[in-house]
Image (tube, rainbow, N blue to C red; front, side, top):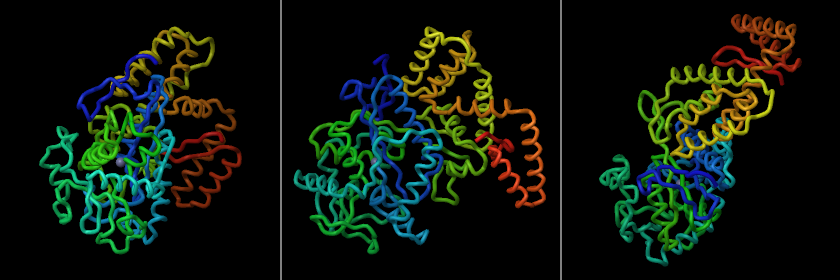
Length: 474
Ligand SMILES: [Zn+2]
């Protein structure tokens, strides 16, 4: 283990030195998606920054085990247990079953998750897999007097805690106490406004598709209980890092802490990592209005998903980030220039281990300092400019990309192939691309497709991108 690793801990409201429960090991839990709709690029920003956290910890020498849940039951449209069931709303919207919706959006989520260079968590657990664990925790909370039954549901009694508002300085208390949208009716079964549902049996959703037997009747779990149980199931009673977006701080994470520590009788998680919103010009990105801007949509528009990652890495995870296509376009240019510089490096000579270590130390220092990703990218540029041989530079690009995950070597290799191919073939490819463009212009899509397929049969794959037609050997 080398150096120190620090990041902003929402629990202490300062940048803390990271000290895990077990030396050299990190247990990390991430709130996963509610799979009723697509994850927009703002959600994906959160997962990119968490991926950087995992990889930065690994770069610093830690062994990280990461668990993520999939919320496929129990999440209502207001995070404070009121409104409509999100999964049910998704199923109705698309005239499908809840399980079909869950499967479809889980697959869509992980496709986008992987496309931006994220490593899959070690454990991915759908909530519907863990019903016995939820029931057990609710039972213990009832036995210990932290929960009560009312109107058929089981609630957590927040008045039993001395310190319920753990993240209170980040959010106004008054705001917390409202906790529900104005247009949503209040649940009269609650003893205190901030109490939350652990288990639903009586709800207004008579056609709730997923129900299970429980000591309190047939029903389904509340959303918050999922994360506490799934985390403990795989990572034990003491968690090092819990991640999520700032939106999750209240009520979700506050409730997770309340029920987990009441259940355990001791502190649960030492570090809380929250990343900030992605905004567009109209304000915070959301899926409530109109079409959802996803990574797949960016791809359909011809953008490389790793350019989106590159864009995210240049800003600090604790600051809101504003997205626009203009900014993304300028990132395309910067990214391509970076790839070009990497492509120009020739892997000759021996790696200068001393220089390599110097730069790796600088990079590690940046990334270990509250995930200073923009500084880490500056170190990458400095390394490319450094007075050392190409072999050392290439080794550094490879090393830094373990955290940045921009596939710089892969992109550079494709670029070199484009320029190093046999001149005759190159001419032919360019001719065919031009013919195809003419065919497309004349709306002769059959010819355009035939040209594409013919090139593919020669091992040349063409792609329409924002920067025009690109091709690669396959
Ligand atoms: Zn959660």
